[in-house]
Image (cartoon, rainbow, N blue to C red):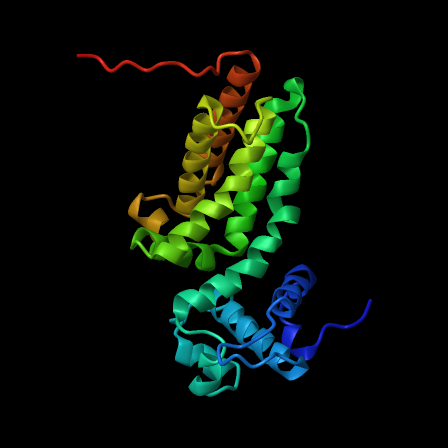
Length: 248
C-alpha cells in the first residue's frame, strides 16, 4: 500500500482517502480558477488543518487559526471557503463518507427476529463510536443548526435520512413511502441522537451529573430497546396509518 502524502499523514487511512476523494470532486476555487494538482493539495491541507484543530485539540476554531495551521494567508483561504460554515460543511463531507463503514453497513443487513436487540444495540454502539470519534465536529454542526444556520440544519436533516430509511426497511416497509413507520423511525432516531449527543459531550455530562464512572450504556441500552420495540411492533403489523383524533 502506498504511503499517505505527508499533509494527510495525521488522518486515518479511511478519512484520508475520503478527504482526497472529496477534494478531487471540486473543479474550481471561488475565484473561478480551475484546480490543478497544487490547488487540490492546498484544499486538502486546509481540510486537514481544520480536522486536526477540531478533533485533536480543544483550542478555538477560527478561519484565521485554520489558515495559520495550514501555513496559508487569509487571502488564500478565502479563495476556497467564504466562511466557517462553508469550511465545516467541507470537513463534514469526507467525515460523513466514512459513515458507511462506521454504522450504515450495520443497518443494511437484514436483522433476524431472534437477534433483534443484539442488532439494535450493535447499531447504537456503532453510531455512538462514530460520534465519539468525531464528537467536537458533530457538536459544532448541531450547535450551529440549533442557532438556525440553514445550511447546517439542512446537513443535519440530510445526514439522518439514510438512517431513517434503513430503519423503515428493517420494519419491512418501503422506505420511499411516507407513512407512520417513517414517523416512528424518525422519533426513534431523534431519541438515539439526543442520547448519543449527551454521552459524547463532556459539558453536558457534567450538567446532568453523569460522571466518568457512569457507562454510556445507561442511555445506549434503552435506545436500543426502543429501536427493538419499534421494529418488532412494525413487523408484527402494529404500525399502521392510524387516524389520530385529539380529545375535546
